[in-house]
Amino acid sequence: MRTRSIFRLKAEATRTLLGLASAAFLIAVVSRGEAPLQAQNAPAQSRVTFTETIAPIVYENCVTCHRPGEAAPFSLISYDDVKNRGQLIAAVTGSRYMPPWQATHGYGDFQDERRLTDTQIQAIATWVKGGMPEGPKAKMPAVPKFTSGWRLGTPDLVLEMPTEFEIPASGPDIFRNFAIPTGLTEDKYVRAVEFRPGARQVVHHALFQFARGGAVAELIPTDGKPGFSGAMPVRMVPAFAPAGDLGGWAVGTTPRFMPENLSVTMNKGSDFILQLHLHPTGKPERERSTIGVYFADVPPPRKVREISAPGLFGALVNIDIPAGEPAYVVKGTARTFANMRVYSALAHAHYLGKEFKAIATLPDGTTKPMLWIRDWDFNWQDRYVYKQPVDLPKGSKIDVTITYDNSADNPHNPCNPPRRVQFGMQSFDEMGAVVFQAMTVSDADEKALDDFNAAIAKAVVKQVTESDTVKRLQEQRRQFKAGAIPPSGCAGLLPSLLFAAPSSEIKKR
Ligand code: HEC
Image (tube, rainbow, N blue to C red):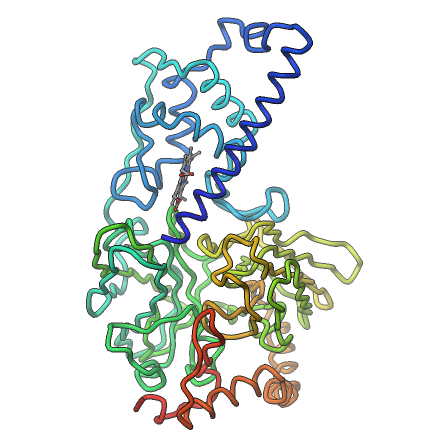
């Protein structure tokens, strides 16, 4: 329920601000002894009605989520649905809190951007102020049709959670991962994943990865319930390799094939790792999601790669945020050692993340805005796909700045009073990076990059094993194996057990 109350808190703040603003406006107008603006210049022909103006806006921008059975808490389909919440709708569209979209408009140009135009926002405000007239019934647009079947056609592989997972009626949000065997007997090239939650009201977002078959069962201690907990990119843990990222889903996402016929190679025998973010709804629910996987016939021309800054989700920059710190800054730079084409960007941090900014600088000094999230919300994790892939010639760099807010004023802070937070895999720990999906632009570049990576491989391993963060995580693991029960949650740090080599001891506990 926690995140719902955060949403509400924000919306309330917006409403209060709007209330204050309009009160101040009224005072200003009245003190000048003039008639309110509304009466002055609201000629009859500019009358905004539901059927003519508002319904098309709402159908285009809101009902993907605000319809029966979807995750948004109410429908916005009929005139009454919308009229009953008119004031609130004017407030949340005016503040651009709805439709939800985190990337700053104009800073990177992305597909499927959810955004109302200024004119649309103004129309909603005018309609609400004007008493929300319905307008001629004949002008009412048809309610959009939503298919209940696969939107990308019949999948090549359908996977289902092995068992249902029970979500209690109330309590904190749950992050749960499920390893689903794929049974693949050869490597496959994944060009899309389509996700269908069972209980749509409960599932807020999902992330897809794959890992070595059986690695989860081998490495992760069971707590007796299906799946395992945490919000972790398994692909960064060497013991899960071969592993990779297959994208994600959030409420309202349109499934798509990868751009330019790209695909990601999923190794034979892999387990599909489904990570679910679940919101209790007030009544007990059971979730069993289904996943459709679409394969390409031919391998991608070259490997789809990740360009990440800072590297390893911040493991090497020793994230260590003092309790109460409102603006802890982490910086990272990624360089291109071959000519690269960048397709999408994904920001990742946990609850304390606040702002992400990524800017590319080309060898000739020109800069390209890549991604700017000003008010990060752990609940709306999206991959932002560029309308036009961004070409970064060899010798370019991407600078990423991430700001964390570990003060008690951060409504997302899970700990009050705040405590020191360091890098780790649990959602109460922190990590952070902007991860770009990219490919070299030619076979010559591919070879150059592979050669370069091979040449620095030893140095990278040395850097990782000698990093303070990795040493700390390994020490935690040693203590845990020796029987120390770690403090958990806000009381202290949970051990991030999975960073080091496989261990059968862990499983026995
Ligand atoms: C991508 C899905 C999505 C889209 C698109 C979307 N919403 Fe929402 N909306 C939600 C969810 C989910 C919530 C519930 C948030 C919560 O409280 O957890 C919500 C909440 C709201 C609320 C309640 C806020 C509060 O304070 O209780 C309003 C009002 C609202 N949306 C209006 C709109 C309007 C108007 C549009 C279109 C312009 C829109 N939404 C588009 C998902 C969406």
